Image 1 (tube, rainbow, N blue to C red):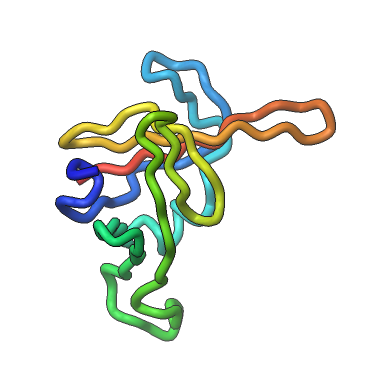
Image 2: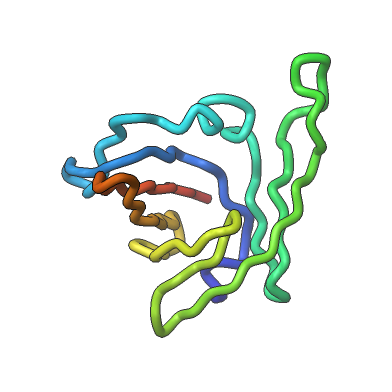
Length: 119
């Protein structure tokens, strides 16, 4: 838990599906990450609360809130992280990167959504 909470994280990338040397080929980059969310800092607090904090000042084109609160929990024995209203499996958690993913199945089609965060 200390690795997760000791300093803020930033989005590096997020997308669907996999298969490159890192195990993730970003076939469909999440447009939210391309947009304003790439400037957010994600703060996981030890008490199970967190916030996505906007790194830019509000503008006419970006009128959103400067902080979006969330709840999180880490189930270390199962390597599960509850974040953004769903469970993600932790693939990597070290001093530099947090890589989490969630597998989805819709109409017989499976996909994996992967989020890569960095310090």
